[in-house]
Length: 357
Image (cartoon, rainbow, N blue to C red):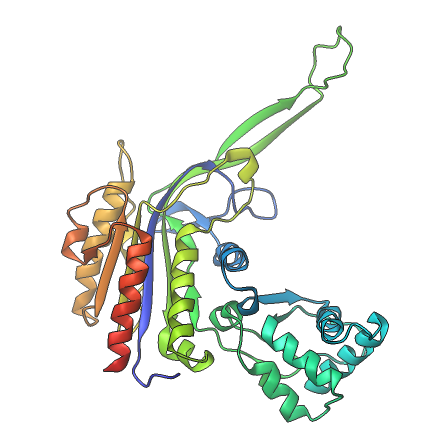
């Protein structure tokens, strides 16, 4: 299923986080970024994409989810054994290695880079290995067909053979706070339960850096590109719905046991555009200032930016939103839905109508 018209899905979210450190740098500090002349809290796109992929694995169909690994030979070998359990695993490893070299996925010796492969692609290559196929073009066709949702969304680069590359149909921005932040320190101690009674000291001492923030999050999907990668309209709609759902519900897990920062977006906004995607982080170039909370003021600034950018781009074909609290400014930009489930249902129906035009 393909569409010749340009269609883009924009997803925006305002999400507040209590004290947390779910994405840290090499020194253990929460990641930050300078924007608008002040320091912002930051969660990298890589961290959130990993969380989205984990959500795909948990709630998507296994056959539609990819695996990223250096141990790609063992992965395909396992599929060969599933085809015929009379084949020893050692023989399956040999067959898998041969077919992956013939495909161009690896050279002789160890795989030196992570390879991103969908479950269906692995099954097809396993079948080819089982049948002793060696034609490179045919094998590469199998390796590129029916990509898993995360391979299609986030792309794949193969340095060994660029013909195996998969262009990403989605982009995920680094989430940043809508306001300035300051990093704080939590000093903690741990008591030795078996220490002598006359030892009143701690078993260990330490510190953890953290901050709290209200984040602006953004991602987009080039629907016309994704439609070329997937089989049919149903697969396209299901993949987009799963992506929106994963964007809303996923959360990077860094230090989550320490801080239990299990929050959800206070506002989720979904738009369908026919000209280009638009990241509305410009709404927060001037940081939000407040002594009574950042969420409402952030949502209001985001809503205003929605209207302001129409001086440059077309008005979205649709805008749906879900919010935890009533917000008058959101009513000016789109149609309220009372749950994510309702939003997904109405988005799929409207997208179907747009694709038929």
